[in-house]
Length: 430
Ligand SMILES: [Zn+2]
Image (cartoon, rainbow, N blue to C red; front, side, top):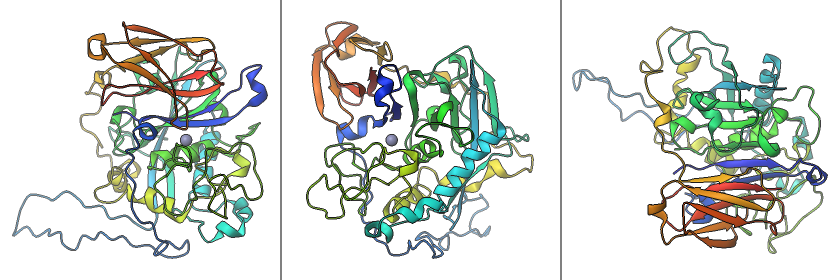
Protein backbone atom coordinates (compact mmCIF):
# COMPACT_ATOMS: atom_id res chain seq x y z
CA UNK A 1 0.00 0.00 0.00
CA UNK A 2 1.26 3.37 -0.90
CA UNK A 3 1.81 5.74 1.94
CA UNK A 4 2.14 9.40 1.31
CA UNK A 5 3.02 12.19 3.58
CA UNK A 6 2.18 15.63 2.43
CA UNK A 7 3.27 18.90 3.74
CA UNK A 8 0.97 21.65 2.78
CA UNK A 9 1.04 25.41 2.90
CA UNK A 10 -2.11 27.34 2.18
CA UNK A 11 -0.91 30.38 0.35
CA UNK A 12 -3.80 31.35 -1.83
CA UNK A 13 -5.47 34.72 -1.54
CA UNK A 14 -7.23 35.24 0.79
CA UNK A 15 -6.02 31.98 2.30
CA UNK A 16 -2.56 33.51 2.15
CA UNK A 17 -3.55 35.27 5.33
CA UNK A 18 -3.30 32.09 7.33
CA UNK A 19 -0.39 30.42 5.68
CA UNK A 20 0.25 27.19 7.45
CA UNK A 21 2.46 24.19 7.34
CA UNK A 22 0.52 21.00 7.26
CA UNK A 23 1.52 17.48 6.75
CA UNK A 24 -0.64 14.43 6.51
CA UNK A 25 0.11 10.82 6.31
CA UNK A 26 -2.43 8.61 4.71
CA UNK A 27 -3.27 5.10 5.75
CA UNK A 28 -1.23 4.91 8.90
CA UNK A 29 -3.11 7.30 11.16
CA UNK A 30 -6.39 5.87 9.99
CA UNK A 31 -5.60 2.23 10.43
CA UNK A 32 -3.36 2.79 13.39
CA UNK A 33 -1.19 -0.01 12.10
CA UNK A 34 2.08 1.85 12.09
CA UNK A 35 4.73 -0.48 13.35
CA UNK A 36 6.08 0.97 16.51
CA UNK A 37 9.55 0.03 17.35
CA UNK A 38 9.58 -0.85 20.97
CA UNK A 39 11.78 0.57 23.59
CA UNK A 40 14.07 3.40 22.63
CA UNK A 41 16.15 3.81 25.73
CA UNK A 42 18.92 6.33 25.79
CA UNK A 43 21.54 3.66 26.22
CA UNK A 44 24.05 3.73 23.42
CA UNK A 45 22.70 6.82 21.78
CA UNK A 46 24.63 9.55 23.46
CA UNK A 47 25.36 12.12 20.81
CA UNK A 48 29.06 12.00 21.46
CA UNK A 49 29.47 8.27 21.66
CA UNK A 50 30.65 5.97 18.94
CA UNK A 51 27.81 3.70 18.07
CA UNK A 52 27.88 0.07 17.39
CA UNK A 53 25.16 -2.06 16.01
CA UNK A 54 23.62 -5.05 17.61
CA UNK A 55 24.01 -6.94 14.37
CA UNK A 56 27.38 -8.36 13.52
CA UNK A 57 28.74 -10.35 10.64
CA UNK A 58 30.66 -12.74 12.84
CA UNK A 59 28.25 -15.56 12.17
CA UNK A 60 28.53 -15.19 8.43
CA UNK A 61 31.03 -17.53 6.91
CA UNK A 62 32.72 -16.63 3.69
CA UNK A 63 34.75 -19.81 3.48
CA UNK A 64 34.84 -21.16 -0.05
CA UNK A 65 35.26 -24.61 1.42
CA UNK A 66 31.68 -24.39 2.59
CA UNK A 67 30.22 -22.78 -0.45
CA UNK A 68 31.57 -21.32 -3.61
CA UNK A 69 28.47 -19.21 -4.04
CA UNK A 70 29.15 -15.66 -2.89
CA UNK A 71 26.99 -14.69 0.00
CA UNK A 72 25.01 -11.51 -0.20
CA UNK A 73 26.88 -8.82 1.67
CA UNK A 74 25.64 -8.08 5.13
CA UNK A 75 25.85 -4.36 5.55
CA UNK A 76 26.39 -3.41 9.14
CA UNK A 77 25.19 0.01 10.18
CA UNK A 78 28.24 2.25 10.56
CA UNK A 79 28.51 5.06 13.09
CA UNK A 80 28.21 7.52 10.23
CA UNK A 81 25.57 6.62 7.69
CA UNK A 82 25.95 8.13 4.21
CA UNK A 83 22.92 8.34 1.94
CA UNK A 84 23.46 8.88 -1.82
CA UNK A 85 21.02 11.41 -3.22
CA UNK A 86 19.72 12.15 -6.70
CA UNK A 87 17.78 15.37 -7.20
CA UNK A 88 15.29 15.51 -10.07
CA UNK A 89 14.46 19.12 -10.90
CA UNK A 90 11.33 19.48 -13.01
CA UNK A 91 11.73 22.71 -14.91
CA UNK A 92 8.72 24.73 -15.97
CA UNK A 93 7.84 28.38 -15.72
CA UNK A 94 9.78 30.05 -12.94
CA UNK A 95 11.35 26.90 -11.60
CA UNK A 96 15.11 27.37 -11.68
CA UNK A 97 17.19 25.59 -9.08
CA UNK A 98 20.93 26.18 -9.19
CA UNK A 99 23.58 23.65 -8.27
CA UNK A 100 24.45 25.93 -5.36
CA UNK A 101 20.87 25.74 -4.15
CA UNK A 102 20.98 21.95 -4.28
CA UNK A 103 24.20 21.93 -2.29
CA UNK A 104 22.69 24.38 0.18
CA UNK A 105 19.84 21.95 0.76
CA UNK A 106 22.24 19.08 1.32
CA UNK A 107 24.25 21.26 3.69
CA UNK A 108 21.06 21.93 5.63
CA UNK A 109 20.29 18.22 5.84
CA UNK A 110 23.81 17.46 7.02
CA UNK A 111 23.60 20.26 9.56
CA UNK A 112 20.36 19.02 11.11
CA UNK A 113 20.85 15.26 10.87
CA UNK A 114 24.16 15.68 12.67
CA UNK A 115 22.96 18.17 15.29
CA UNK A 116 25.38 20.77 13.95
CA UNK A 117 22.70 23.46 13.80
CA UNK A 118 23.54 26.61 15.74
CA UNK A 119 19.97 26.99 16.99
CA UNK A 120 20.30 23.75 18.94
CA UNK A 121 21.22 25.97 21.91
CA UNK A 122 17.60 27.07 21.97
CA UNK A 123 16.39 23.63 23.07
CA UNK A 124 14.90 24.22 26.52
CA UNK A 125 16.53 22.56 29.52
CA UNK A 126 13.63 20.15 29.91
CA UNK A 127 14.46 18.50 26.58
CA UNK A 128 18.22 19.02 26.34
CA UNK A 129 19.14 15.48 27.43
CA UNK A 130 17.06 14.06 24.59
CA UNK A 131 18.84 15.87 21.75
CA UNK A 132 20.36 13.47 19.23
CA UNK A 133 22.90 13.69 16.49
CA UNK A 134 21.52 11.14 14.05
CA UNK A 135 24.90 10.71 12.36
CA UNK A 136 23.37 10.56 8.90
CA UNK A 137 24.99 12.36 5.97
CA UNK A 138 23.60 13.02 2.53
CA UNK A 139 25.83 13.18 -0.55
CA UNK A 140 25.01 13.75 -4.18
CA UNK A 141 25.37 10.58 -6.23
CA UNK A 142 28.51 10.26 -8.31
CA UNK A 143 27.36 7.55 -10.70
CA UNK A 144 24.06 6.94 -12.40
CA UNK A 145 22.36 3.53 -12.46
CA UNK A 146 24.32 2.59 -15.60
CA UNK A 147 27.61 3.34 -13.83
CA UNK A 148 28.29 6.59 -15.69
CA UNK A 149 29.49 9.72 -13.89
CA UNK A 150 26.78 12.09 -12.69
CA UNK A 151 26.51 15.22 -10.60
CA UNK A 152 23.45 13.74 -8.89
CA UNK A 153 21.44 16.68 -10.20
CA UNK A 154 19.00 16.06 -13.06
CA UNK A 155 17.18 18.86 -14.82
CA UNK A 156 14.18 17.85 -16.85
CA UNK A 157 12.01 20.22 -18.84
CA UNK A 158 8.33 19.54 -18.38
CA UNK A 159 5.08 20.85 -19.76
CA UNK A 160 3.44 20.28 -16.39
CA UNK A 161 3.26 23.69 -14.76
CA UNK A 162 2.11 22.45 -11.37
CA UNK A 163 2.38 19.08 -9.72
CA UNK A 164 0.07 17.78 -7.01
CA UNK A 165 0.36 14.78 -4.72
CA UNK A 166 -0.62 12.26 -7.37
CA UNK A 167 3.01 11.22 -8.02
CA UNK A 168 3.02 12.37 -11.65
CA UNK A 169 6.31 14.04 -10.83
CA UNK A 170 7.81 10.57 -10.40
CA UNK A 171 7.03 9.32 -13.92
CA UNK A 172 8.70 10.45 -17.14
CA UNK A 173 5.62 9.33 -19.04
CA UNK A 174 3.49 11.78 -17.06
CA UNK A 175 5.69 14.88 -17.28
CA UNK A 176 7.88 13.99 -14.33
CA UNK A 177 11.09 12.01 -14.12
CA UNK A 178 11.47 8.33 -13.30
CA UNK A 179 13.00 7.36 -9.98
CA UNK A 180 16.48 5.97 -9.91
CA UNK A 181 16.66 2.61 -8.12
CA UNK A 182 15.59 3.37 -4.58
CA UNK A 183 17.76 0.59 -3.23
CA UNK A 184 20.73 2.81 -4.01
CA UNK A 185 19.49 6.39 -4.11
CA UNK A 186 17.33 8.73 -2.11
CA UNK A 187 15.25 10.27 -4.88
CA UNK A 188 14.30 13.90 -4.31
CA UNK A 189 11.97 15.53 -6.81
CA UNK A 190 11.80 19.33 -6.91
CA UNK A 191 9.14 21.19 -8.83
CA UNK A 192 6.30 23.66 -8.76
CA UNK A 193 3.56 22.34 -6.51
CA UNK A 194 -0.11 23.16 -6.72
CA UNK A 195 -1.84 25.02 -3.93
CA UNK A 196 1.35 25.72 -2.09
CA UNK A 197 2.00 22.10 -1.18
CA UNK A 198 5.48 22.18 0.24
CA UNK A 199 6.35 18.53 0.05
CA UNK A 200 5.54 14.92 0.81
CA UNK A 201 7.36 11.67 1.25
CA UNK A 202 7.05 7.93 0.90
CA UNK A 203 7.74 5.63 3.83
CA UNK A 204 10.23 2.75 4.09
CA UNK A 205 8.99 -0.23 2.10
CA UNK A 206 7.03 1.75 -0.45
CA UNK A 207 7.06 0.85 -4.14
CA UNK A 208 10.48 1.65 -5.68
CA UNK A 209 8.85 3.70 -8.45
CA UNK A 210 7.48 6.20 -5.98
CA UNK A 211 9.97 5.91 -3.15
CA UNK A 212 11.42 9.30 -2.25
CA UNK A 213 10.67 12.85 -1.28
CA UNK A 214 8.89 15.56 -3.29
CA UNK A 215 9.63 19.20 -2.49
CA UNK A 216 8.22 22.47 -3.71
CA UNK A 217 11.02 24.50 -5.30
CA UNK A 218 9.92 27.45 -3.18
CA UNK A 219 11.14 25.79 0.01
CA UNK A 220 14.02 23.80 -1.44
CA UNK A 221 17.45 24.94 -0.29
CA UNK A 222 18.35 27.93 1.83
CA UNK A 223 19.69 30.51 -0.64
CA UNK A 224 17.65 33.64 -1.32
CA UNK A 225 14.62 32.24 0.44
CA UNK A 226 11.82 34.28 1.92
CA UNK A 227 9.05 33.44 4.32
CA UNK A 228 8.71 30.90 7.06
CA UNK A 229 10.47 27.98 5.42
CA UNK A 230 13.92 29.30 4.60
CA UNK A 231 16.21 26.88 6.41
CA UNK A 232 15.73 23.75 4.31
CA UNK A 233 13.72 22.07 7.05
CA UNK A 234 10.76 21.00 4.96
CA UNK A 235 13.26 18.54 3.50
CA UNK A 236 14.50 17.60 6.96
CA UNK A 237 10.93 16.85 8.04
CA UNK A 238 10.11 14.88 4.90
CA UNK A 239 13.28 12.83 5.06
CA UNK A 240 12.35 12.13 8.67
CA UNK A 241 9.25 10.43 7.23
CA UNK A 242 11.33 8.74 4.53
CA UNK A 243 13.36 7.24 7.36
CA UNK A 244 10.23 5.97 9.10
CA UNK A 245 9.27 8.74 11.51
CA UNK A 246 5.68 9.66 12.16
CA UNK A 247 4.55 13.11 13.12
CA UNK A 248 5.23 13.88 16.72
CA UNK A 249 1.53 13.92 17.58
CA UNK A 250 1.11 10.44 16.10
CA UNK A 251 -1.39 11.73 13.52
CA UNK A 252 -4.25 11.44 15.96
CA UNK A 253 -5.56 13.32 18.96
CA UNK A 254 -2.87 12.96 21.64
CA UNK A 255 -1.66 10.06 19.51
CA UNK A 256 1.42 7.86 19.71
CA UNK A 257 4.30 8.37 17.29
CA UNK A 258 5.89 5.10 18.37
CA UNK A 259 8.81 6.94 19.95
CA UNK A 260 9.20 6.71 23.71
CA UNK A 261 10.96 9.99 24.39
CA UNK A 262 8.70 12.36 22.50
CA UNK A 263 5.89 13.67 24.70
CA UNK A 264 2.32 13.20 23.62
CA UNK A 265 0.70 16.28 22.18
CA UNK A 266 -2.83 17.00 21.06
CA UNK A 267 -2.05 17.80 17.44
CA UNK A 268 0.39 19.78 15.39
CA UNK A 269 1.76 23.17 16.35
CA UNK A 270 2.28 25.96 13.89
CA UNK A 271 4.21 29.19 13.82
CA UNK A 272 6.68 29.68 16.63
CA UNK A 273 5.33 28.67 20.05
CA UNK A 274 7.12 29.46 23.30
CA UNK A 275 6.94 28.37 26.92
CA UNK A 276 5.39 25.14 28.11
CA UNK A 277 2.41 24.07 26.04
CA UNK A 278 0.81 21.18 27.85
CA UNK A 279 -1.86 20.03 25.42
CA UNK A 280 -2.29 16.42 26.54
CA UNK A 281 -2.66 16.89 30.23
CA UNK A 282 -0.23 14.82 32.15
CA UNK A 283 3.30 15.63 30.94
CA UNK A 284 4.78 18.63 32.76
CA UNK A 285 7.32 19.11 29.99
CA UNK A 286 4.56 19.83 27.51
CA UNK A 287 4.71 19.66 23.73
CA UNK A 288 8.05 19.28 21.97
CA UNK A 289 7.07 21.84 19.37
CA UNK A 290 10.71 22.45 18.43
CA UNK A 291 10.95 18.91 17.04
CA UNK A 292 11.48 18.54 13.28
CA UNK A 293 8.43 16.28 13.13
CA UNK A 294 6.04 18.97 14.35
CA UNK A 295 4.86 21.61 11.85
CA UNK A 296 6.31 24.78 13.29
CA UNK A 297 8.26 27.35 11.27
CA UNK A 298 11.73 26.44 10.06
CA UNK A 299 13.31 28.87 12.50
CA UNK A 300 11.42 27.29 15.38
CA UNK A 301 12.21 23.58 14.90
CA UNK A 302 15.70 22.39 15.69
CA UNK A 303 15.91 18.91 17.18
CA UNK A 304 15.44 15.18 16.75
CA UNK A 305 15.34 13.01 19.87
CA UNK A 306 17.39 9.96 20.75
CA UNK A 307 14.33 7.81 20.18
CA UNK A 308 13.75 9.28 16.74
CA UNK A 309 17.40 8.72 15.95
CA UNK A 310 17.12 5.06 16.92
CA UNK A 311 14.02 4.65 14.76
CA UNK A 312 15.59 6.31 11.72
CA UNK A 313 18.82 4.36 12.03
CA UNK A 314 16.88 1.12 12.46
CA UNK A 315 15.70 1.27 8.85
CA UNK A 316 19.35 0.75 7.87
CA UNK A 317 19.59 -2.46 9.90
CA UNK A 318 20.36 -5.70 8.08
CA UNK A 319 16.68 -6.43 7.69
CA UNK A 320 15.70 -2.79 7.32
CA UNK A 321 14.15 -1.28 4.20
CA UNK A 322 17.09 1.07 3.64
CA UNK A 323 19.95 -1.32 4.37
CA UNK A 324 21.04 -1.56 0.73
CA UNK A 325 21.90 2.15 0.69
CA UNK A 326 24.80 1.43 3.00
CA UNK A 327 26.65 -0.22 0.11
CA UNK A 328 27.12 3.28 -1.27
CA UNK A 329 27.28 2.01 -4.84
CA UNK A 330 26.05 5.36 -6.14
CA UNK A 331 29.14 7.01 -4.69
CA UNK A 332 31.67 4.60 -6.17
CA UNK A 333 33.16 5.69 -9.47
CA UNK A 334 34.45 2.29 -10.54
CA UNK A 335 32.32 2.27 -13.68
CA UNK A 336 30.33 -0.78 -12.70
CA UNK A 337 26.64 -0.45 -13.46
CA UNK A 338 24.50 -0.34 -10.36
CA UNK A 339 21.48 -1.75 -12.10
CA UNK A 340 22.25 -3.71 -15.31
CA UNK A 341 18.56 -3.69 -16.13
CA UNK A 342 18.24 0.04 -15.73
CA UNK A 343 15.94 1.56 -18.31
CA UNK A 344 14.42 -1.76 -19.33
CA UNK A 345 11.72 -1.87 -16.75
CA UNK A 346 8.51 0.01 -17.17
CA UNK A 347 7.65 1.97 -14.06
CA UNK A 348 4.29 2.89 -15.57
CA UNK A 349 3.18 -0.67 -14.86
CA UNK A 350 2.28 0.44 -11.38
CA UNK A 351 -1.46 0.23 -10.92
CA UNK A 352 -3.45 3.43 -11.17
CA UNK A 353 -4.93 4.82 -8.03
CA UNK A 354 -8.47 3.52 -7.57
CA UNK A 355 -9.49 6.92 -6.27
CA UNK A 356 -8.94 10.00 -8.38
CA UNK A 357 -9.99 13.31 -6.93
CA UNK A 358 -10.77 16.54 -8.75
CA UNK A 359 -10.21 19.43 -8.59
CA UNK A 360 -7.07 19.99 -6.55
CA UNK A 361 -7.43 22.23 -4.65
CA UNK A 362 -11.20 22.54 -4.24
CA UNK A 363 -13.54 24.89 -2.41
CA UNK A 364 -17.14 23.64 -2.60
CA UNK A 365 -17.26 20.09 -3.95
CA UNK A 366 -14.84 17.41 -4.97
CA UNK A 367 -15.49 14.73 -7.55
CA UNK A 368 -14.09 11.33 -6.70
CA UNK A 369 -13.68 8.99 -9.64
CA UNK A 370 -13.75 5.30 -8.84
CA UNK A 371 -11.64 3.46 -11.41
CA UNK A 372 -13.14 0.06 -10.72
CA UNK A 373 -16.69 0.64 -9.53
CA UNK A 374 -17.56 -3.06 -9.33
CA UNK A 375 -15.02 -3.49 -6.57
CA UNK A 376 -16.46 -0.61 -4.58
CA UNK A 377 -20.18 -1.36 -4.88
CA UNK A 378 -22.00 -1.07 -1.54
CA UNK A 379 -18.98 0.70 -0.09
CA UNK A 380 -18.60 4.19 1.30
CA UNK A 381 -16.12 7.01 1.12
CA UNK A 382 -14.88 8.34 4.43
CA UNK A 383 -13.35 11.77 4.88
CA UNK A 384 -10.79 12.19 7.63
CA UNK A 385 -9.03 15.18 9.09
CA UNK A 386 -5.27 15.29 9.49
CA UNK A 387 -5.78 14.12 13.04
CA UNK A 388 -7.42 10.95 11.81
CA UNK A 389 -10.88 12.06 12.91
CA UNK A 390 -13.71 10.99 10.64
CA UNK A 391 -15.51 14.05 9.29
CA UNK A 392 -18.12 12.55 6.99
CA UNK A 393 -19.07 9.50 4.95
CA UNK A 394 -20.66 9.28 1.53
CA UNK A 395 -22.06 6.12 -0.13
CA UNK A 396 -20.50 5.02 -3.43
CA UNK A 397 -23.36 4.69 -5.93
CA UNK A 398 -21.49 5.06 -9.20
CA UNK A 399 -18.06 5.55 -10.65
CA UNK A 400 -18.27 9.23 -9.75
CA UNK A 401 -19.03 10.46 -6.26
CA UNK A 402 -19.66 14.13 -5.57
CA UNK A 403 -18.65 15.14 -2.05
CA UNK A 404 -19.77 18.52 -0.69
CA UNK A 405 -16.89 20.11 1.18
CA UNK A 406 -18.09 23.71 1.47
CA UNK A 407 -18.47 23.49 5.23
CA UNK A 408 -15.04 22.03 5.92
CA UNK A 409 -12.36 24.30 7.30
CA UNK A 410 -9.52 24.95 4.86
CA UNK A 411 -6.73 22.43 4.97
CA UNK A 412 -5.75 18.94 4.02
CA UNK A 413 -8.08 15.94 4.20
CA UNK A 414 -7.81 12.26 3.54
CA UNK A 415 -10.28 9.97 1.80
CA UNK A 416 -10.50 6.24 2.09
CA UNK A 417 -13.08 3.60 1.47
CA UNK A 418 -14.23 0.77 3.68
CA UNK A 419 -12.82 -1.72 1.21
CA UNK A 420 -9.81 -3.25 2.89
CA UNK A 421 -6.35 -2.78 1.50
CA UNK A 422 -7.14 0.17 -0.72
CA UNK A 423 -4.93 3.24 -0.94
CA UNK A 424 -6.07 6.49 0.48
CA UNK A 425 -6.76 9.64 -1.50
CA UNK A 426 -6.26 13.15 -0.34
CA UNK A 427 -7.53 16.58 -1.19
CA UNK A 428 -7.01 20.19 -0.33
CA UNK A 429 -9.91 22.40 0.79
CA UNK A 430 -9.14 26.01 0.03
ZN1 LIG B 1 4.93 15.39 7.79
